[in-house]
Amino acid sequence: MYPLNRNRRLRANESIRSLVRETIITPNDFLVPLFVTEGNNLKEEVASMPGYYRYSQDLLEKEVKELYKMGLKSVLLFVKVPDNLKDNKGTEAINRDGLMQRAIKTVKNAVPEMVVMTDVALDPYSSYGHDGIVENGVIQNDESVDALTEMSLSHARAGADFVAPSDMMDGRILSIREALEEEGFTETGIMSYSAKYASAFYGPFRDALDSAPVDRKDIPKDKKTYQMDYGNRIEALRETEMDIDEGADIVMIKPGLCYLDIVRDIKNEFDVPVAVYQVSGEYAMIKAAAEKGWLDHDAVILEQLTAIKRAGADIIASYFAKDAIRLL
Ligand code: PBG
Image (cartoon, rainbow, N blue to C red):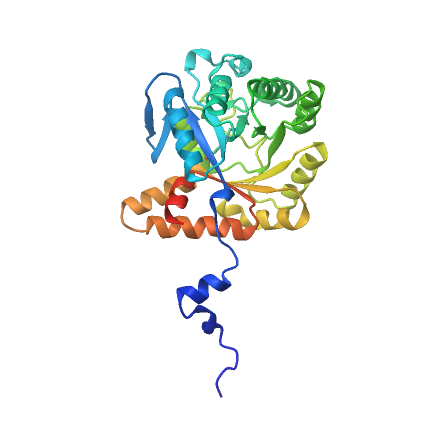
């Protein structure tokens, strides 16, 4: 007796495999994170992210033109703020001539069609490296929400299409949405980091922006009082539901690979676009293993990105976006 149903018939060669393939990634899936720094003619490699760079404004302009030519039509901006501009309240975050505000205009002027999203959290601006304001060793929720709301307005005024709050304070989406409406920014969207876990995979990003929590006895050295505990799943659904109720247009899960069960849960439960952030530590792991010759760089990238989409991602924020396009 032999099997009548032979699944291998559908795997016999690449032509049939491609005919029945359920998930394929395309340039339309990607959101490209970009690191911006002060200065001129600077393209600085991030030490723990080989092949990934911080750009000064002039080179940022070149980079976004290149991305758009490749079919990559949305970017997520982050800035590296000079130390002397940092304080506990993240005052520099609302400077109308600040690095972020200028970067938004640079990208919009270079490629008006590019969707510009901006990270909203105080950490790159905070002298303590926290996403909110710290008092007596505690990250203050409501005071931070006020600051993040002002920051969002400032990004909207500079021309951001979407603000992306990555801070995990309670109630910030409602506050930001209401403020945007009041100022007439009815078309400015919110992509909320809804299920953002307190993860050890953000290390290289904090190197890139010099934004890690400071090592001081009176300051929490991790973000566990606001980012989620990685043991939790139901809580991710609750966070996401609240953000949608408060006005989020897009929700995000972060990091990627370790949290694909959460991605599927959220995709099944809600009807807004779902973004997934394949974070800096995930990038670094692949780069390091590939450098040693232990993993096939290109094959692993495609497998991971496809898995993220298969799990339910409509949008993938990834440092590998350009690599993916090259490989498609
Ligand atoms: C800022 C922010 C972080 C990341 C995105 N926005 C760092 C953090 O929360 O500490 C991490 C992205 C990455 O690791 O690639 N709040």
